[in-house]
Structure formats: C-alpha cells, structure tokens
Image (tube, rainbow, N blue to C red; front, side, top):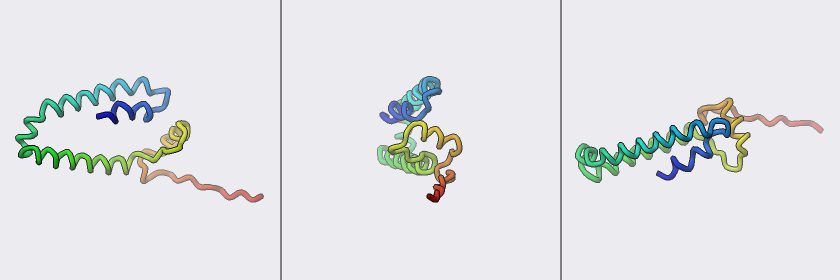
Length: 105
C-alpha cells in the first residue's frame, strides 16, 4: 500500500496536483477499509487462505497488463516531456511515435 501514497505526487502535473491527490488518498483509504473489513467474508467465499492468495495473484496479473497498456516509461524524462506526451496519447501501445527528421548540413 505504499505506492498509492508515493505515486500521485509524480503522476500529476503541477497545476492539478493539489486538486487530485486528496480524492486519490480518500479512494486508497476506502479500498483499504473494504479489503480489511471483508477479509473474513472473502476467506469464506474463496475457500480459505489459498483462495485469497489466488484471488490477489489474479488481481496483480491484471494490474501488470494495465500498467503495460496504459502507463508509459518515464525514466530520465522531464516533467514537461511527460506532460507533452499525455497531451496526445492516452494508451501507451497506441501512442504517436516521434519521428526524427534528418537534417542535411
């Protein structure tokens, strides 16, 4: 549960960061409350601890596919470059690739 508290500060542009971090933190706390509150019920529905581990494994695999499809690699990119990227692209696999023009000297 550390990622939801660390990632939003890097994820949003400066202009809207303060506006979106509050609702995201509220959502994270609500999800954590639901997960803890319904743990025993989920344990009974899924057939014990093994079922819960398989369920969370399935959710983790879905998360990997989500990240692969929608989240671009931003290593060594400036915030302005990331903002420019998201002006034209929303799905990483369907992104508009930059073309480099060969300039003649």
